[in-house]
Length: 188
Image (cartoon, rainbow, N blue to C red; front, side, top):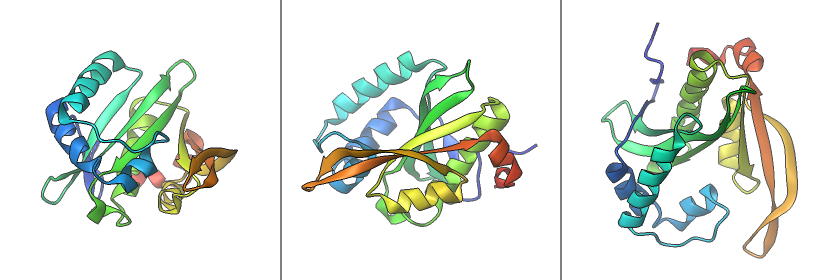
């Protein structure tokens, strides 16, 4: 047995809403981060509003939502978050979301490691059957990361979002527990 929430580069943690609100406020200053994370237009949100939202969201989530901070093993810096929403326990499915707020860690394997840890938790601890996600077509770095973690392309919604005068697709990706186990991805 090993620490279920620890990977090669990161570990997943429960975070106080105050800590997350402070970081979300800072990360939200980077409009590129916001546009990779959300379909909504970029807008600045106060730390107070982030905290109110996190308090309310985490309180109502119960078992249908799981939210972790992503911290580096080296130095324990908070660099992002990962979680799922719409956990359909009766079907064994969930949708997952991840974002690294600290730009210097983008493209260095931290997101892939966090996703692998979360998949291990989903499949080994909760015995889920499938984990799915939605990614924007204009985010090839995230798409590659998800593929490295074992996700496969399942579909697309064509022209679902307008950004910079162009229509972009939403891509659906997923991984089944059997695929995850067969690929030996669970070891990281």
